[in-house]
Length: 75
Image (cartoon, rainbow, N blue to C red):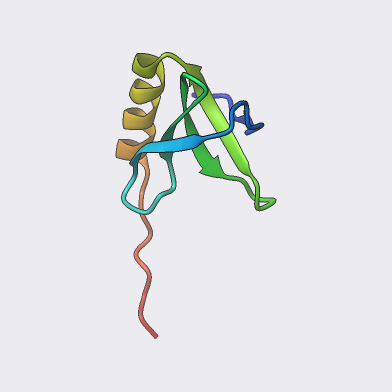
């Protein structure tokens, strides 16, 4: 289980490294640190596993491979 906290920018440039199929979980880098980011219910963003690449990439793989993408039905 991962602990999610509000994403507070710590650098001037946010880079996307990888994204899950529907962009529910995004592996990002910012100011020489990596983390997994997701959209929060309030419209902002949350982050987890901030730190070295190996730690954040492991979290991203676990989260993105374990989530169920709900297919959108065309109307």
